[in-house]
Length: 337
Image (cartoon, rainbow, N blue to C red):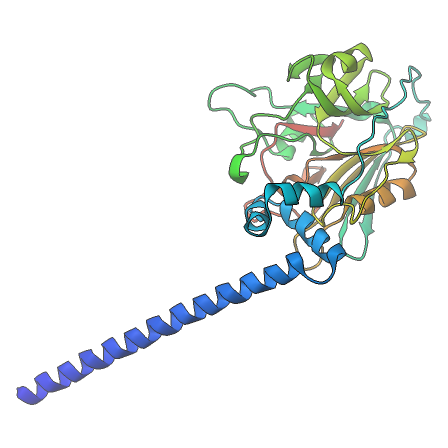
């Protein structure tokens, strides 16, 4: 009996020693990992190459969780200064008002072309909609109602009997947990203000009643006076009246992007860039401008991106969305009827 008790005590003691050693090993590994990670981020954020560091900072800051990481290393003043030197420049230009309809040949009105696009850090999809009169804005009709939330782009496409769609304007997204129920700024649907204030000054992206893409900074009152029928708030403006905006520094981070543009013949360009994967890190604003110009855009603007970037065609998502939980609910979507 005594021998058995001694064996049990030795066994328990051995287990305790093993447990302590295991715990110490785990804690040590975690500490080393945290220190290594911190030093790696420190090198990336404040390393010897300012251009690479600025690109990395801009990329991180456009993600929901990345903002908190960047704030470990920089003050708000430093972040603002870095971002201001690595973005498209602000433009006061607005799309020239045009009251002429585009003359789309009858045999081209139903034409939709989908192209694969790629660059050194990204890949994605470009949809070319030949007839701009097919563009409409899907809007969350329940926005502002208690317990309401946005819808995924597929829902907007289905509810409008449309063939395709992309995400559109931004929305209130506290801590990355917004449900797409509260849109940013101004939203105009069928010539009526459905969100925002008449005197609110925003970057507006939309179509007038002659199907011209209108981009620029204005109030809702201005937009309605200029007969804008559908519009959302986001930005920045990338191309206006045939001229690309100037790019400073790195031109923004590498992230998933959604961009809308229009050619001189009226065709609408819908661009969605994949990002945050090993096969596609993402695109900068400069990358998006280049793609738009290569395909003839005379006006173009950036829409909400990141985990909201999605392109739907024939009822299916045709790009690689970021979130493993599926595409996000959003308050607005550009749809192709």
